[in-house]
Amino acid sequence: MAKLSTDELLDAFKEMTLIELSEFVKQFEDTFNVTAAAPVAVAGAAAPAAGGGDAAEAAEQDEFDVVLEAAGDKKIAVIKEVRALTSLGLKEAKDLVDGAPKAVLEKVDKAAADKAKEQLEGAGATVTLK
Picture 1 (cartoon, helix red, strand yellow):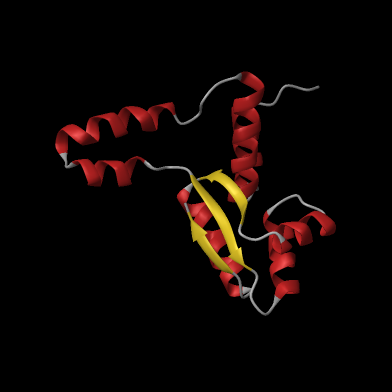
Picture 2: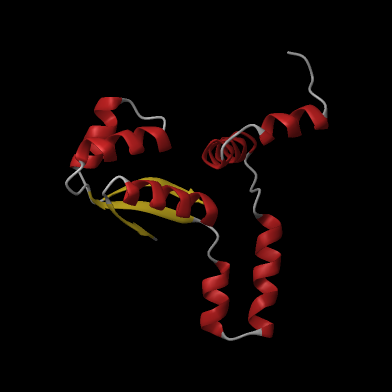
């Protein structure tokens, strides 16, 4: 395999969606047994000294689960959105929607979680972030 330069890698990352990039980071972490969010933990550890306990706990959460609570009236549209957000096939996406409440995405950043919630709610689903 040809070795890619840093600029080539950055160009490839720029073409990815947030969800694709999030999945890449998870796979990278698993493959090399590392955590890409280590610098965030240092910033989060400094926050309690400056602020209150509740504010610091809310600021520390950087990973969210997008949980499908109910499909609503437009079940087919919700299944399509689940398939668009994940790499699931039709049967798996239908099973996930039928089995609600269930997590659609796990441990994604705030931006990806908000985007997924917006897309699923636009299709008629009831969604919560945890």
